Length: 448
Ligand SMILES: *[C@@H]1O[C@H](CO)[C@@H](O)[C@H](O)[C@H]1NC(C)=O
Ligand SMILES: *[C@@H]1O[C@H](CO)[C@@H](O)[C@H](O)[C@H]1NC(C)=O
Ligand SMILES: *[C@@H]1O[C@H](CO)[C@@H](O)[C@H](O)[C@H]1NC(C)=O
Image (cartoon, rainbow, N blue to C red):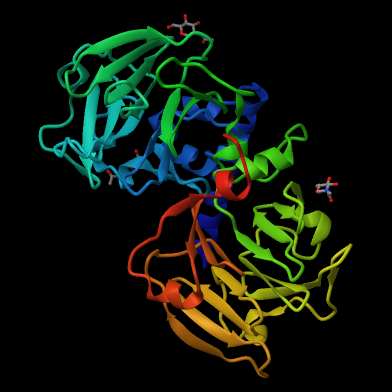
């Protein structure tokens, strides 16, 4: 016991001096200070790296599974939310060469007709390039950048893959300061360009067929051939590519929520046909017969729930909102009213253990379809007590984010896409992933 309390004391002292050290840093008022942590501070950085604080990323690449990885120092943020991990947990050798700095640039080589490099992730660190395939370093790497990409300078800032016809030929675009290099992957010819009017990129990636240049904690969408930026840019990276709760008052919630690439937490339409889509602290609502979307905080209309819901379904003019192992029930109206006696345990209301991923009721039925991992349960809402019956497994995805059911069938949401099935039965029988739809573009009508 004595030893334990001594250890505890030591930890407290360390934690306090740690906090003090960083408070001092912050007084300096330098927003991106995390980036200047040396190796001796790597451990501190692991605790402190918070992408919602406005980090400038070193590099961004999309993996072969379509998952964006944001690199910062010796850490990586996977996807649009969640904590940083050490990048060497995913790419073991990146940290072996201590004289090399952090990842300067990264991209996924995606050219199916070049099988030796297709779906390899390339990392540029100082003068070296690393090539990984399925998280394994390719034989003979790291190599010099000048050997693998002749004509491309060392110490790059960013890189992005650019297949034809986005670029005239299958290319990789490298960025260094305001110099732009179009590297033709077939002929190895390099074309130098200036992208007038575009900021110097610190990282860049291609995502859903668009090209994004990150600079500071902002980004601009650009034309990869000319570097032209159309529309109102730069925009705030945290609004579109990260799941952060509100951090400023100046942003337009509707535009941000419609255009965010971050996955939805839940979506439903009520009996009248109004659609509600939930993400983090906000929700979007589209009233039946009106094709404009409105956005607000969850707190403002569903105070008891506050934020971050797991699943929402509507049934008999009520919204059932599930968060962790609790169910909140609101009577639809203006305002929505929270029913007395709720929240109740999920186990009691639906008979299922939380957390769940999605839930929905299809037209004119009394069955809640509850998706948890790859298992789908049926819960008869007329029965008492409610007993979940395993309806089947849905193995096209390891996990879905949200789902809804309407007159046209089932929509399942995963990442920034949704997938449509004519019916629940067809969904459970599906053996191949159907055509993907872009949530921001096709559902919310975001034009960029
Ligand atoms: C990853 O990097 C950390 C810190 O730089 C180091 O302590 C750890 O041993 C490395 N892990 C592997 C698997 O190389
Ligand atoms: C962009 O990079 C060039 C060097 O290539 C540098 O001279 C210029 O100051 C940079 N611009 C900004 C805004 O940092
Ligand atoms: C449609 O919805 C928007 C946003 O909620 C609202 O401002 C507008 O008045 C509505 N239009 C109609 C015709 O109801």
